[in-house]
Length: 266
Image (cartoon, rainbow, N blue to C red; front, side, top):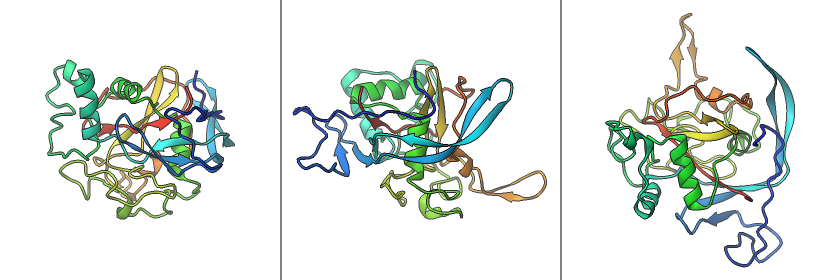
């Protein structure tokens, strides 16, 4: 079972075929998955401070703890794109959950014009799992995702404390849909669109997952009932707070629901 904290992410890249290890003792910064062409970025071992759930009843209590990532791992540089998901479908004949349900919109026809290098959307968690299995990778845990997203930062956002359009696709600058992956600035570890463009699935524990990072459908700021303007809609989706192990209460797919993968040991 996955746990929300302290993962031993072992990466045995010592076999000759499909090896991820470089010729020297230092690890390369990127790895290309031969299955789908996705570029993965090396995420080094380390730690970050997070609010960890302790007592889970009707309410949840949290304690601040230093969460350790004892071994590095690889994370996809971008969200999985339409062209990559299309390759998966062509090879396997896979039919997405939205298509099976007869939904008017699906990854092929999301309701807005999209290009091959846009993040694939209208994806269910099961769809993402099937893709990851085909590509020989995994979906990230919530801990892995938050650690990689924040990239060593302790500010509100991974780029600083103020919202910055240079890092995010949101409703204010992408009214007609999602946009090309990697068109905004990356975080310190070279990961693009960790905030905005598409929500991304992450595993909380067996049987429970969460969507992180916000999407192009979110407003970067809004007025509360008290009249205040708040800009924390995105900040809350990358806040270093781990979720209790509860099944999600959300739509199974949507026009802003996508994913990115990680590579680690089986």
